[in-house]
Amino acid sequence: EMTKEQRALMKAIVDAYNRHQIPQDVAKKLLQEQYSAEENFLLLTEMATSQVQVLVEFTKNIPGFLSLDREDQIALLKGSTVEAMFLRSAQVFSRKMPNGHTVVLEERIRKSGIPDEFMTPMFNFYKSIGELHMVQEEQAILTAITILMPDRPYVKDHQAVERLQETMLNVLRKLCVLQHPQEQQYFARLLGRLTELRTLSHYHAEMLTSWKMNDHKFTPLLCEIWDVQ
Ligand SMILES: CC(C)c1onc(-c2c(Cl)cccc2Cl)c1COc1ccc(-c2ccc3c(C(=O)O)csc3c2)cc1
Image (cartoon, rainbow, N blue to C red):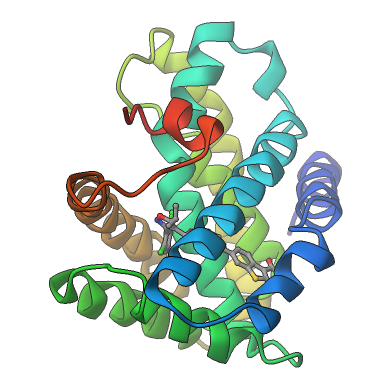
């Protein structure tokens, strides 16, 4: 059973997760603009920039995050943004957005100059997340766990982050038993996705390099968070 504190922690994280979403007018652009590779790249850049802003606000609402060392907060954000965005965009795909975002988002990602060798692992990941049928609470806590990864580069107070992450893992473990009682290994499968996210973030670093080579432009926020240019 979940303790009172664990239920309060879960509520705080789920509320923050729901409160901070890409504004509808930004998401709607996916449906409106043209379909050239250039247009797709620009739109995805806008989505990513908006999503980073959303992630920063969500992260600030993770109980305990703002008590961490300031530089460690930055290191955690920089180190987890790509993975958190793969998780978030995966949820868009598995949500089968009623307003058709799923179809156009896939279309635009497929036609945005991303080399084919990254398409397969990326969409395999989206499929594997979809098959888990995560509930919203699991999505929110898994995102918090991804952000609170103690072994990100340049994190100094490893232990402080580990303590926070462990608290989240304990909540997630209990939640999985409650939400998927018939699936013994559900929690383990969820954590397996975090390993897949690491691989994707390595692919992503190569995607960035290949985009940079083709002189693609990013926004100042993305340049800062991804150390490009
Ligand atoms: C700079 C750009 C070209 C880029 O580089 N790598 C990636 C990138 C890609 Cl192509 C795949 C995965 C991760 C990243 Cl960073 C991207 C695009 O990143 C995206 C980030 C986030 C969304 C995203 C999130 C939520 C939602 C919602 C919702 O919540 O209601 C509705 S629509 C939507 C759209 C899309 C694209």
